[in-house]
Amino acid sequence: MPGTVTYTKSMQRVYAQGVNISTIFSPARAFPDVSSLVRVVVANAFVLAGVLCFLLLVFGGFSFIMGAGSGDTKQTEKGKQAVTGAIVGLLLVISSFWILQILGRLTGMDLLNPRLQ
Image 1 (spheres, rainbow, N blue to C red):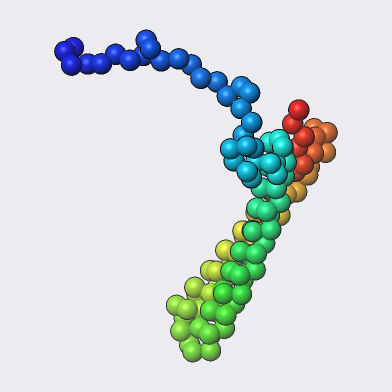
Image 2 (image 1 turned 90 degrees about the vertical axis):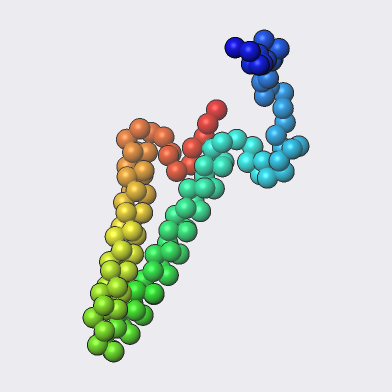
């Protein structure tokens, strides 16, 4: 084709061997390997889920009480749905934690604290 530039012949492959990422990206110093990063992410995910569940329970309960007090059935339903969603979400998080614990026992690996070699 006229006007087409072919540049693939002059390109070279570049690999990340010998690159120290901690000199470029300073937060990488806190996580020397992937397993330490996974540990922090999983632990914080469980904490975040608990905090969100608590906030949703408070919001839903407040909405339910305010709706019931004023006789507003729509607001009462919204509050009931928020509380139900918070409880279902908390049960899912707790169930996932238990499933990971059971799988860890069955496989002999600690899935919540992985150690990658």
